[in-house]
Image (cartoon, rainbow, N blue to C red):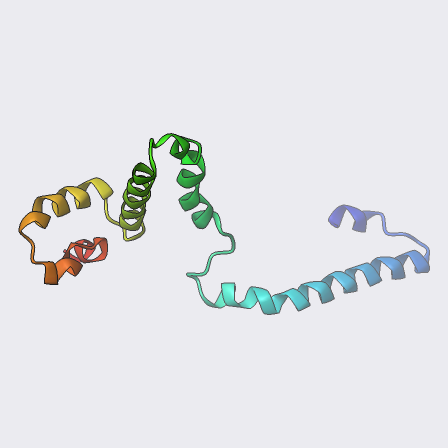
Length: 125
């Protein structure tokens, strides 16, 4: 825009046209401000969905591999394992450390206290 100001037209009608374009741009941005305001007011909101896209990437990459799980039961086992691993990641827990801890404790753990074995409970320790 600064480059254009060096060579402003001498014709007033062209100048009005440029001014009208500028006004239209400002009005358009003012209308968008309502949707932009929450992102400015709350720093924790993200402007894009990159984190969601990244979390889905392993599923998309593994989709073809899941065709070769061998059986329906194998597919269910793969889905359970994937769910556990991704849940641990979402809770900020290393999946390998959490699964090692759980597998070491589960045999003697009381069934009424299974919630202590969840990734979010492990993250609090």
